[in-house]
Length: 273
Image 1 (cartoon, one colour):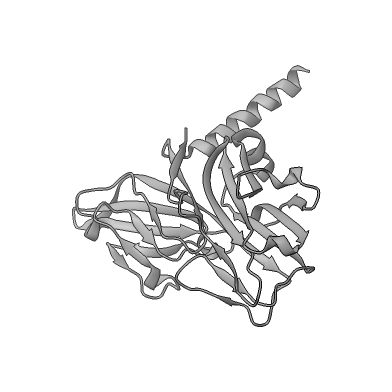
Image 2 (cartoon, helix red, strand yellow):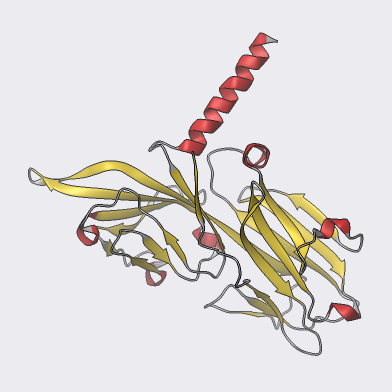
């Protein structure tokens, strides 16, 4: 029994170290796809334009990508046009996509004795992206490049629709630990904020895979009264709302639009201590 307790304690210590990070405090930013996000650099020096470097790590890449070097954007990166560096060394990303999730590292460099030297600890920011997709898809569907919205035509009463809400989350620990110890949760709710699991007309299923730490799908058959009805996928951490995506049903040849609610602060940054 003592051995089992020792193993449990060791597991909690390891989890705590992963949440805390090498520098003592890591920033975790939750954002919905299509939005604008600011990633803070907590080790900033006075001259960010000449001394700052931002690197990006993802499970989908074998090596880190240099986004900013010496305060200058690297033009050979695919997200070059969507990046900008602020005077406080923070990194801005516009029109966030699910491909942007990952670990961003801000480093500061100074010139000493004829060569560059890294100054202070790295500032680590984990960017987690919430994204919703709709099926079955339509050949006439389209998407917007300037906002987190997609549209689908051909939707009508009597059709079955499935909304898949996916959290692209970069961590050094398992999804089970994230849910159990940190209380991260995805929910489908109606306009009043009521959990749709309480309504038998909706099938709600949760799962995970290699890239999506949490997936929650909503499946239902559309009714006549569903026109202009709104469903929201919301992400909570320890029962506090972090970000959400809403889906509004449109009939009579109108487009079905997936859009961000305006009353949610999507650039909320919180820290694991």
